[in-house]
Image (cartoon, rainbow, N blue to C red; front, side):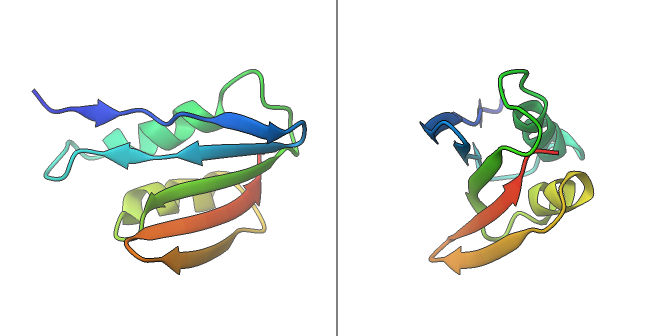
Length: 90
């Protein structure tokens, strides 16, 4: 059994959500990481246009691609082994 650590989104301000995406290292079925991203973006308590800051593994192309598919105006920067991403909830 593989352990998937779901994102733990939280509001730091009324208009800003932080989310930390982590998964256990190793192989997972294709689409698993994309589903984690979608689960956060589809949460009902985030209004459209809410600022979103996400921390995800810098080498996780699947998560990054899913965010790019769902959001616009994305800013990213690498911070060690993590990627910090800023965007808005679609």
